[in-house]
Length: 66
Image (cartoon, rainbow, N blue to C red):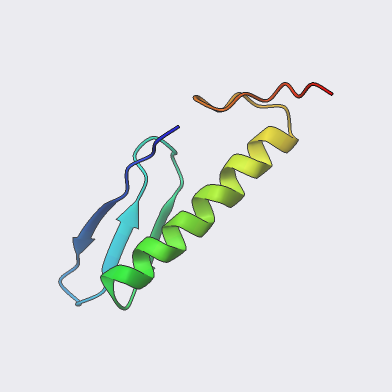
C-alpha cells in the first residue's frame, strides 16, 4: 500500500498536508515537515481505526491467519 501526501502553503504561511486516498486526513503545520509528519501519524490512526471497526481499507489485508 502506498499513499501519497499532498502539501500546499497557505496564504497565512502555514502548511497543509492531506492524503487524497483517505478522506478526512488533512492537517496543518508550521513547517512542511511538521505537516507531513502529522499527516503520516493521522493516516496510521485512521487505518488502524478502520481495521478495528471491520471496515475495508484498500491495499490492506485485514484477515489474519495463525
